Image (cartoon, rainbow, N blue to C red; front, top):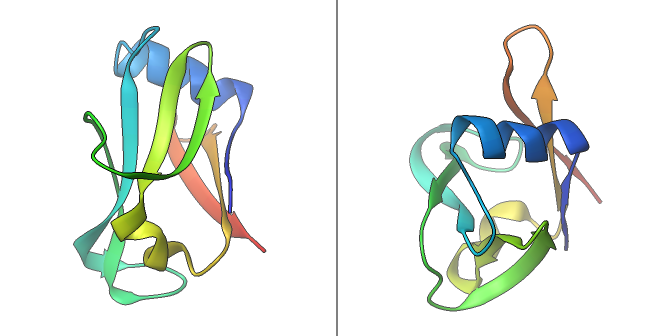
Length: 96
């Protein structure tokens, strides 16, 4: 399992969240909504220091990660993070 971020997504984090070198951005399972794998859960994201990293990708010294406790949500799929050009918001897809 990997976290893959497009160049546009990295730019979004730097601009919208003011992410900079040394920051940690967590992707996690949150209650509510739906996902391709789990009804009643959706993907959340915030800036937070890790407790026990399960998956991590570092780009421009910014750490993007998923806690071990949240790996179940991704159902052994890679998380692909991009930007929707129509809304200028993040979009998430999953690939095996």
